Image (cartoon, rainbow, N blue to C red; front, side, top):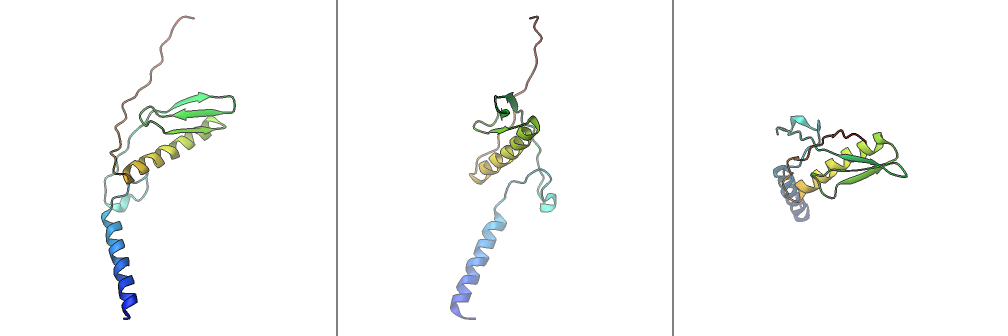
Length: 110
């Protein structure tokens, strides 16, 4: 085998070993056969109607926000946004926070 190919092959094998040893976060339902227990967390999102549709944010994930023309669209966008946010946190070596925010309605005579 020519020397250039051998070096190239060694680089590929080294990169493959690094990828194999790195643990990527999984999205819900994605690759359950990967051999890792998947943890489901439920994050509260707050949805507000705007002049052009809806906006949403999660109090447990500062900076994670989204918009949409309909409530269904903003919920879908927010789910994707949270998954992306958590994946980024994992790649940065940050721990995913446990959800701690809850909601309640209070009835007041008006």
